[in-house]
Amino acid sequence: MPDDKADLSAPGGSASPRPGMGARRVVDLLGEAECWELLASGGLGRLVYSNRYGPTALPVVYMIDEGSIVLGTWDTALFDEDLRTGIAQAEYQVAVEADQIDVDAREGWIVLVRGAAHHLDTEAERAPFIDAGLEPWTEGVPAHFIRVNPTGIWGNRARPA
Figure 1 (cartoon, rainbow, N blue to C red):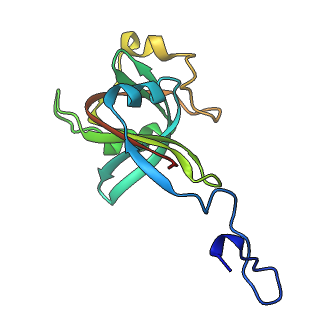
Figure 2 (spheres, helix red, strand yellow; figure 1 turned 180 degrees about the vertical axis):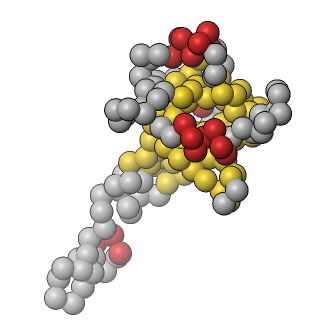
Figure 3 (cartoon, one colour; figure 1 turned 135 degrees about the horizontal axis):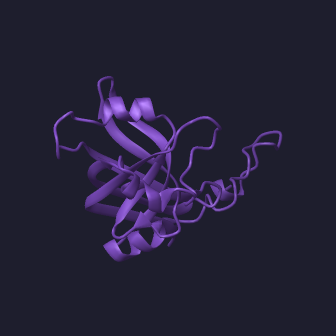
């Protein structure tokens, strides 16, 4: 019996695969414009960086602003301690990852943006992002914003062949 017809719940057999598992998939490399298009609606992503304990990936909300990504973070102390050099104009290199994946259909996209993390510390820098959907999700946590000025962008899409 072919694998895609097997039924594990049957007395001697194997289960039918989830929908979409039997179909062949391909991965397409995305161009820069398509990556930005996918990121344009903003949403939930991950800020990826190295801290004193090693590689770290934390959830952030993001939006696109004038060719860069602005992040709303949830733990100001953590981001301040790990993402400030203490040297004027010296900024940590980070990555921002966002995706939309349908596990059952085995398709979706991922975009990774690399660049320098600039903390938005002045009121003038922060003002455009107050009440823009980047606020912390919990009460009592101060809003903190980081702008990532991209030096590179990469993405791919998994889809049925």
